[in-house]
Length: 235
Image 1: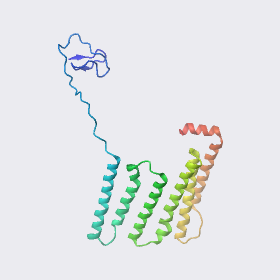
Image 2 (image 1 turned 90 degrees about the vertical axis):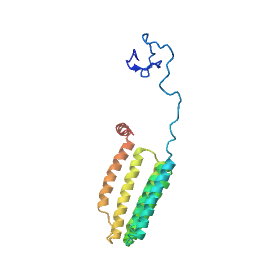
Image 3 (image 1 turned 90 degrees about the horizontal axis):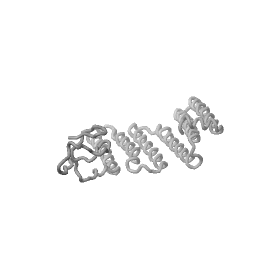
Image 4 (image 1 turned 30 degrees about the vertical axis):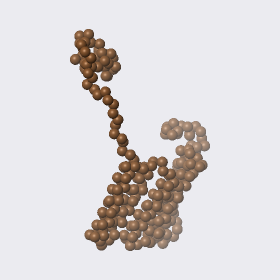
């Protein structure tokens, strides 16, 4: 057995070059009388076909359907006092809608994705209302809050695509959404509790968002500050 003159690795008799540093094998004390057979296979094969995203989606969907049907049968024939299987069905539906676009097709329209997410959240809350047997909280809170969030998020994506693509503009859009969303939640809660319409804790959120918005606007109109922030924050 010979060794590489460059790196010292142990070499097989069939090797012409060192597999580590590619140095030609020169060993005058061990010259083979006949060409040695390489211990490595000469046939090159292919790795098995990778698992397709569609196959994963099928298995994932079958699993969620199986869980939903199994729990539904248990609810129907064994534990039939309350429709608790609606919760399991709603959770499975949430998991499917939230994850299946990334498994099947990652280039799904963001508008369609956010509308589907908002719709399935509303459907899940409606199932909770059926289980509880009360719908006043659903129509007063559970329905308008996801609708408001979905509307604000769609508006933010439209503004980001049609008006300005900058990072500072996106920050202003998000701060505006947070302010409007918190004010909307407080007003809806006061309407549900039959209290006068006024803002209290949402005014604190609005003040913080206003301060941050002023800072962002200042960075936007002062080029030196904008460039300094861009270098330090890497955007």
